Length: 171
Image (cartoon, rainbow, N blue to C red):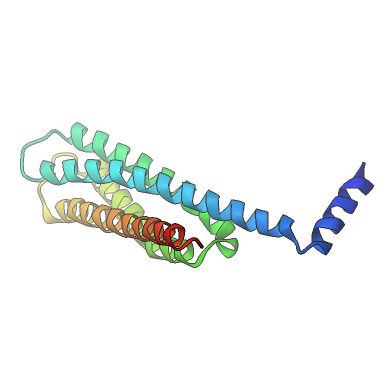
């Protein structure tokens, strides 16, 4: 049985390595799927961040803040899981996918740091929700969420447009 597998791999390699091409193609498809998942998660994160931003303007309870920050943290952690998967296949994906990974990874790190800082502040100062130390974290979370959503959407939209152009050209 093992010999048959080795023979199949050897035959594929001798025929021009379609086995490796299929693997790279699959990894590229996986990367696109993961990037689309990141876009959806970022959309949800952006909604939570915008809600947190509105909390700066009204007297919302610290529990509401805590709940919304917990939701944001869940989205950020889910994004982080996808980014880890993307990083694992980074060497086998298309250039635009590597550029997308490179553009959103640092923003995800900033989002995680600001969200953790906001959660820590809230845990220590539940009654002080309108001081700049805390509200600056909320603004930064909203800004980074917007930045990430714009970046990932731009990369996916450009790739989609390129794919349509290639189909029109018959490539």
